[in-house]
Length: 129
Image 1 (cartoon, rainbow, N blue to C red):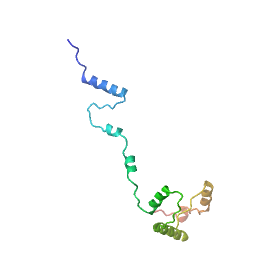
Image 2: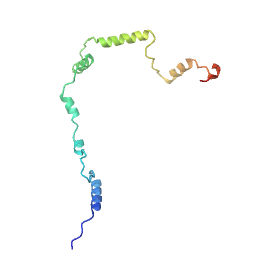
Image 3: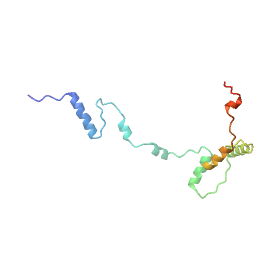
Image 4: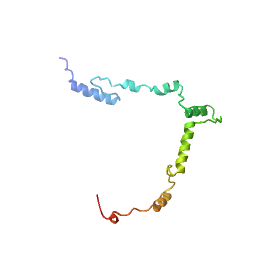
């Protein structure tokens, strides 16, 4: 009499161990997982290199020209950039510009010591709302 075949649970356990040993994906139900697609090379860099870059404005045009000829001295006029700089200069003249960046820890300590300390709440009459 021939030997009986092993039970299916034993075969699944053997398949799981085999997949772990040979670095395969254990997929007993044979579901579509997309691993063949994930193993392929990425197509994005090749596609991006094939098509020329879009020139969307003066900045991108100048950036492209500088890459082609680094020694070229090109004078251009960017009206939006000039308006932005004029607006910032006007705001700074009124005292509404961006605050200065701190340079060191010592400088930030000096600025903190110059600020007046707020009065305690008890001196305000002790009223709480």
